[in-house]
Image (tube, rainbow, N blue to C red; front, side, top):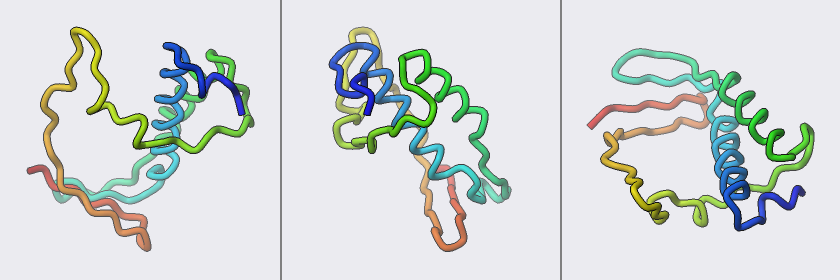
Length: 108
């Protein structure tokens, strides 16, 4: 595994964030979603390619084994940065039907 994922540096933090996002997109890419009554298939191929490119810029080689993301250690709600706020995010109630690869979301 590339040592950048263990570094306590800006680049290490970026690598861990990209890895977490890439993992999430890999899990949900290809599923069918229903949002506000409209059905669509999620496709994160472009986003995943952009993240892989950014990881290459950080020295992570294609085909290299990536670490399992640690969702507890990388909780943005617990992080603080001067002058930065996550703000208020609109809540959505979502349910995921794994057998049908379907995500249903309703804005609340």
